[in-house]
Structure formats: structure tokens, C-alpha cells
Length: 434
Ligand code: SF4
Image 1: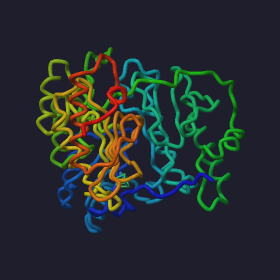
Image 2 (image 1 turned 180 degrees about the vertical axis):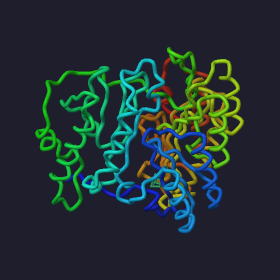
Image 3 (image 1 turned 60 degrees about the horizontal axis):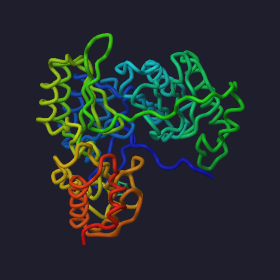
Image 4 (image 1 turned 30 degrees about the vertical axis):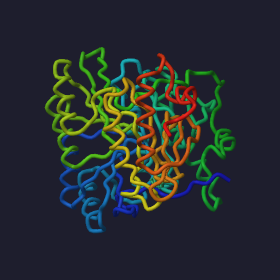
């Protein structure tokens, strides 16, 4: 039986980590205003929190809190309308919408209204508060930059400007609906899911009960949509014109997804000064600032870079994904954040397209986000197993692993024929430096 395990930290139910309590703020459309950025930054500073993180569901979390601080934060967020008073209502929130919704001229549907409606359905329907917290919806309007398989039990993906397809986990179903029907369909689906799994000791995932779940809903003939889409590459510093307005949105990578309250406040200020006072968070450790005039693009990028964000497409941080490692997780064998920082510094300026490097402190592999050029996985104190393109290369002390990767990247940059992958290059030369 596939089981739904664990819980997601919320403002009512913080998670204890090595560096203190972890609290997550749910943002159903991944947007915060400048005022909200200030409010969160002020609250964080007032309780001594120095680190905020972007999550892989485009939410914000605060680290290193104590009990008193998390209670103060909870009250402020509720007062500001950023969280629910009812812990059960807050626990079931989990809607992720494509961060380019409403900005991408190639998208089929802007699903932000649906995201808000689904969030209301989850919070305002007491019967649904029995859902496991780790369920969630991902909503993708079918534009240029697909969300891909972000963690969510249910997906609603636009296949035309009038049709959405339901996904269960990573599997498309035959079930189609119109945008206006989606909330009612979701309500029936969730109620049915609760009924089917009512007697489970731990509720099975929706994908494990797919047949029972879907036979209760209207079926439609299946047609194939184009499920493959390009990903908005972390750090690709996208400046895409919005056809109707001539305005741009600018993307910048937050290194390791971690930022200080000061940086959050500054990002909000830049959004206010140059854009519409809105910051979009993404599941890719990118923030997006919409509604920027083309003539202000360089100033916005410079302002973000001044505060440590990566605004160049070739910045190594665009491809580096460390988990929190030893600083926040007791399971970690290594200081992933320090090793990532060394890699970012030593790889700077080497390659046009940054390598996708995952760095996890243990075999659980929290940094993993799909295929990587290389991965470092903590094994025992200070040691990494190195993988390149999935091949296990060996086990090294952290310094040596970083050094090996840098030297291989230097050779790759100097030698590679056009279009050869990092893994392909490694396999061709057949060795790394001894
Ligand atoms: S990969 Fe391991 S060390 Fe890193 S956050 Fe996950 S459990 Fe902790």
C-alpha cells in the first residue's frame, strides 16, 4: 500500500529541525505584495529569524524559530490575512499555480482565479479538513514554461483555452473539464477520495485508488495533449514581453532558495519602485518581478544582483540545488550549503549554461529535482558519493568532491564539442582526475 506519511509544517504546527522550528506560509498563487513582503520581513526580524526559504511549492518558510517566536508569527500572519485561524483549514492548503500565469503570452489559460477558488474550497469546507496535508493541486495553464511534475496529488493542466485535464500524481487521466466546472469536480473528487480511504490506517494516495476515484466521475474520450513543456530554467533571467502591455517580467535565482528578511524587504521595494508591487515566487528558487518597463530592466537586475540574487543566465546558482544539510537537518553528513557556495564561486564564468548539480546531505536526496548533470550525496561524516549523469563515480571527502567536479567542469568547458552533455563528456573521457 502506498501511504501518505508525515506532515507539512504550518504556522499552527511548526516542524522541529536541527536549527529550531520551521514554519511554512502558504501562498496559493505564489504571490506576495510589497506590503506583505515588509510584514513578513518585519515579523521575522522581530522574532530573531534570519533565514527565509523558498519551497518547491512556491511557498515561503521561516527557519530557526523558538516556540514564542512561532506563536508571535502565527498571530501576525492571521491578523494580516495570510493564514487561517483554524489549524485544520490551514493544514489542507496546498495549491501551486504556474508562476508565469497571467504573464505568459503563450499560455492557454490563466489559472490564478482557479487557484484562489480551490484554496477557498479547501479552507472553507470542514469536511475536507480530514484530507492529508501532503495532498495538493498543481495548476498549469499550458504555457511556454511547464510546471512539470511538481509534488502534488492532483494536477489540472490546460489542454486548450476551454479544457483542463485532471492528473493524478504523475499520471494524466481521461477526465476533462471546463475551467468553470473545475471546483465542483475537485469537490466531488476529494469527497470521494475521503470516503474510499476512510478505513485506511494511513490514507492511500489518490493515484493508488485511481480506478475507484475516477469511476464516480464523468468520463470523456481520451485525447493526447502535449504533456511535454519547457521548464523555466532556474536563473534563466527571463525577460519576456507581455504582448498586450509591452511590459516585462524579470526572473532571478535566490541562491539555495535562502534569503534574509532584509533581502525580502528589498525585493518588495524593487517590485514597488519598478513594477506593480507584486513578487511571484516559483518552485524553482526563482522570484519573478512582473510589470517592469523594458527601460528599467537593467536597473531591476542590478538591484537584485546587489542583494545577492543571480540575475545572469550563466550564474552557477541557476543550476545548483543544495538541501539544507548539516545546518538544519540532523540526518545530514555534510555542510551542503557551504559546499554549494564553494562550487558556485569556483564555477563562476566557466560555462554559458550552468550545470544542474544536486547536493544532498544524505541518501534521502531532498535536493533532487529530476535529472541532474551531477549529484553529491552525503554518506558519512564529511563524505559524498558523487554521481555524474546517474553513474556512481566514487566516494570522496567533501573538499575533494568539490575539487573533482570543478576540474571536470573546467575540462568540459575547454574541450567539449558543441552539444555534448556533461555526463556524455565524462563517459567519453572515462575518468576524473586522480
Ligand atoms: S537530503 Fe537528507 S540531509 Fe538533506 S534535508 Fe533531506 S533528509 Fe536532511
